Image (cartoon, rainbow over all chains, first blue to last red; front, side, top):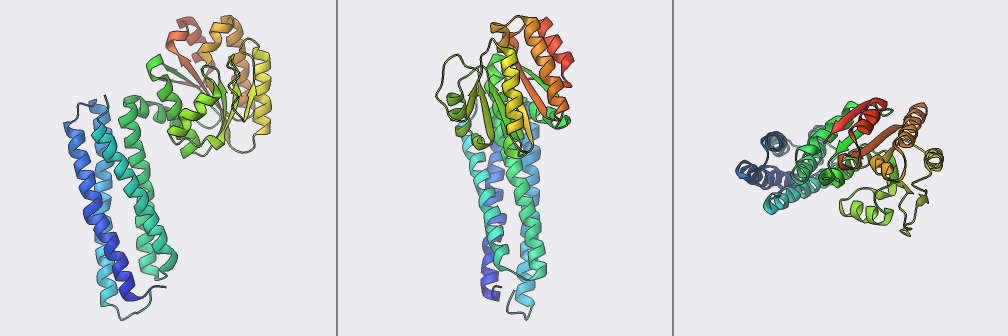
Length: 79
Length: 242
């Protein structure tokens, strides 16, 4: 079990990772791929994987944000 | 030419995804609240997928289109099929790495590796550099020089009956899910007449089938003539051209 404040801290850490750190790297990588002289089929395949990762990271941010809101609103102390 | 920047970026992304997975696993050890656990488990499962996706991208950058061709080809065949991979000399090393990463690292199969073209000691070094799980590899060394590597059985290149027996013995002695990897069957044509190599291949394919074991044969195009390639192709269940 973890206390409310501790849990909020943990979720905020994960949120900054999912919302800032990971998408920034993925977007930078996507730009590099688009500018590269790589074979088009390979490029498309790489772009598909990276886009999926970006979409899912955004979804993770949404899930984590909802969790933070729920924890803050609830009267519960231990989670 | 691979861009160093691309490689650095994707390696960073892969490491971050691994760190994210570790973070959520750590959270799930202490948090007990059901809705939070469910949400974090869902994210954790995605992170595991992201590690696979980023590893695939790393493979595509390092090896180009042949990476997908070999991986898709390997997925299309069952665990009891025999597959011939034909490749040019320039992509031969890449093919070894792609097959081992897919079948050993990802699918968890043990590999009975028949090393014909290179000494086992140098193969192990190269595989370790690429993070192949070498503890799952069991070698039959056919090099003419003793490489001194541990964990291998020696066999002579011009005695294919003996080689077949060594493979059968190692299959029996290796428990669990496994496959036989022949690197590269085309080199046997240098030491033996074509009909002898083809008889050996035919017997090996039939015996792997009866033991319900996957068999992967690699043929380097420059080492083999067209007629022999056709013969090997007809014996196998499928062919992947790189």
